[in-house]
Length: 495
Image (cartoon, rainbow, N blue to C red; front, side):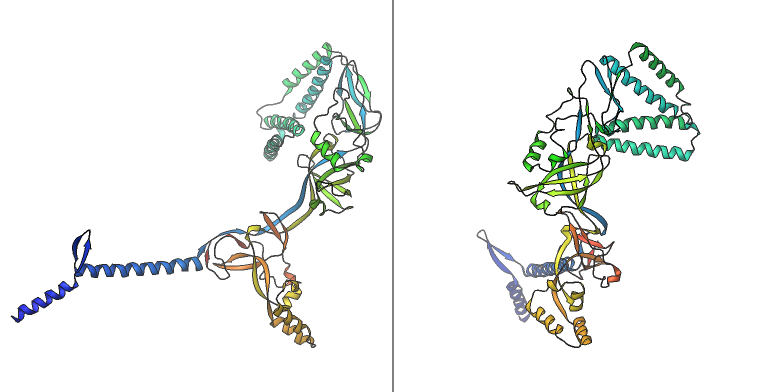
């Protein structure tokens, strides 16, 4: 009976571990061993959650993936974009009636008084024949210059191949930028170089047969046309241009001084609607001295100074740029714009043709260590008073306690004691810099921004090692962090 009683007690104990729940109106018994398994599973899940939470936050705080860019030496220019109008003292060449005029000089060529600048033919056919004769002469001259090209060495052939590639690249750029005169010149030069390459590589012995064909065509043109034109000579020296836009008497150097911004705007808006090619066959710019006028916002004009010489960049010109002296900065008009007047003594061929073209006024050029503007941060740093003074950063201190400390130290009479106090005492100040990676840790590099593009690159001063205290400043080849979250000095990161 005792055995039966103990068995019953064990049964009751086991039954007590069972749980009953109601599910949809039905009584369901959950056995004790199931409860124990659920408890263990819950504890394991909770432990995994806490471990994952700790690992995640450790990774975020101590080992973060970032994006870096190497700091390198760069040169950037502070430029003002505008539209420039060239103004010169010019003499229009009168039209010739009863014939076809062919210029004897090219646009931008310098001519002297009494020099032949044009030929007048009795008919357009005779004029076309003359043009073709001139082309034939140039072709014959080119082919004759290639007769010794077969003697070139392998090294000279390689140099020729590089030159051809360079000219093709320039032609592609000229086409994309619509530099039509440059396209014509490059096309002719590339044809010449390709023909010369054929001879150099002994694929063609010479072009004598082609020269004979051209001479035969030349003789045929001479016999079929009257190629004894009348000559037109220049009455003065200067620079020739075939384009006459009707502004020659209005856009003089004398009138440039009295122009207003409203007049400049009107000219820019109406440019291209005036042409006098049917009346005049060209003009002569009297001198190499010329003016360029443009209008810029008042804020841009404030960065310029009268009397200074600036580089005027001509993006669509072969010459690239010219140096011009700023003679006048007018008062702002009702639209907040200012007229600028420049003077230049160097006349390029494009300027003898183009009246209006885009320009860039180079205000200043900066060279230093380049970093992304978006990477720049403001941080607080404790700096010794000695360093603050040596770097002229006392003005950055703005809290009363630090200022009072600096004042007390400056009142110390003994020079040695005062300098010692300045070395030992530090104050908090705001510092501009970037986060960088040194090894696998984040460090803060101070910067001194010389020039910054909006949403672009900032040029920072490169510290001279002779200045001392360069350890905490940005250096060439530093790996600057441009993308990353939760950054702070000492954080472990992975590049």
